Length: 166
Image (tube, rainbow, N blue to C red; front, side):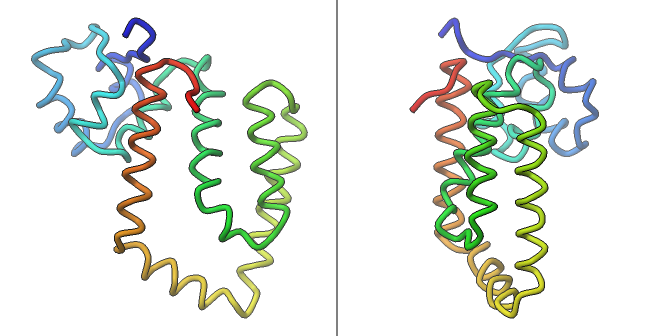
């Protein structure tokens, strides 16, 4: 797996990780991967959790940022059916095109601003309370666990391949 995306403890430490995640990572990697030695970024999924692995993506070089944007769009598209405003859906499309170099930074920022406006509009809508209650109820459900599992699985595939995988 020569294309695996690699990271070092030094890279992670330079980004000021949280104490709990850092201790967990050191316990797992400290003996096998001294500070400057690379290890597969996907290992963090196994030693820590999806949240810590997603956080660690910020510690990688900028060359991977389009790949992380693709992953974020993919994850958002898993719940796109819950998006009632077309501005939010359009922002996903622009973000995807941006990750491929097919949309400018200006287009991305404009789409993001429109999506935020859609979110603000929705917050004032009468359905906000129902949506909020449904989201909180789903947070502890099997659906939430399944979504997290699917995200971790997809992220591992990407990290191990070193590129976007369908």
